[in-house]
Length: 315
Length: 173
Image (cartoon, rainbow over all chains, first blue to last red):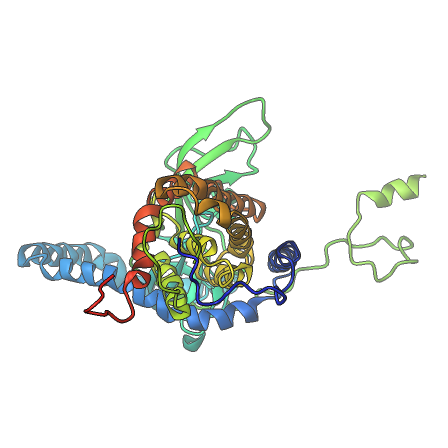
């Protein structure tokens, strides 16, 4: 028998009862959970713990990075030459459009000035590398290597060479967390390129996106390209987001179920571009104009209750 | 250190720094990109469970809560999700400790399996409550693998306690 532990079990000094400790820690965890979920006031705690965790996480990602590097190194001359060839070819293919871009831009600006329409915003941003994806199996998020130190703020849109990837949701001192557009309930305001129909695109969590709240007879076809509409004041308009892959029109439901696949390599590793935040949009007009004589008892009530006003006046 | 029915040799007392070191090692293992693969166990839960059973006076709910918070931040989940699961695990482990150690190693693994499954279940429920998606059944293969790893893990983590402090050449034990 191995009853020879050098310390005998404490007889008098036993500390709080296990059940009391359990209820204390359970209450603490649940309190943290609810506070973080509903009030979002624990970011300072997350930031300070992240300072300790972040170097360790980067350290553990190095084997993968090194493997990828060696693979790259031994990839061979032939493949690199092919890739170079292809890139040159692509550059030549896009050259006619690009060369005329500056001229088109000035022309567009002049025309817009003539029409009295607001100028299009210029796009600027900084390139960031995806470090790792968060281990959490419940959400689609990645961590990139630019953070507070490089001037990243929460809310900035993230794109890659094919389209929108996601949005910065949390900023740490040396890194930032990007929620992908495929994350559950991550929403992007989009419009259909073919006819300009506006809607909101929601992530489903399984790598697909769904166009919600469109009537069953909406003019959407398979293969339609969806681009950002720019109505939210976060994404600039015109970035490709997704392509419609399947449509279910069931007369039992009032809305069509429209599924689409992201155009950008959303779930892959690589380099992305974090776009600078947009200029603030002009303020929204007041939502409900109260009729003269009505609502005079509550002048400060901000909530529009248009539906109820006529009822009251009728009664 | 707990007595078991089959231990034929006297184990040295555990060194506290070794417990801490192994917990940190398990935390680092959890940071590896392999943890995305289905069937890869939650190393931290496994090691916490091991020390919770072996040394329940040293590793209790406080340490479980602390490491749970670290995992929450590393995973970018809602704070308290892992902490809640690990606290329950530590409580279960310390309650079952005196019983589990009387069984052979393979049966100990079977005793530990429900505890580890409880961790995954609590995490899944908390994740769903926080608005996440259902992670799929692959998420629940981890505890099965972890329970099978109980035997090798016991040998590895008890290795520093197997060695004698000073060997007497005249009277080798």
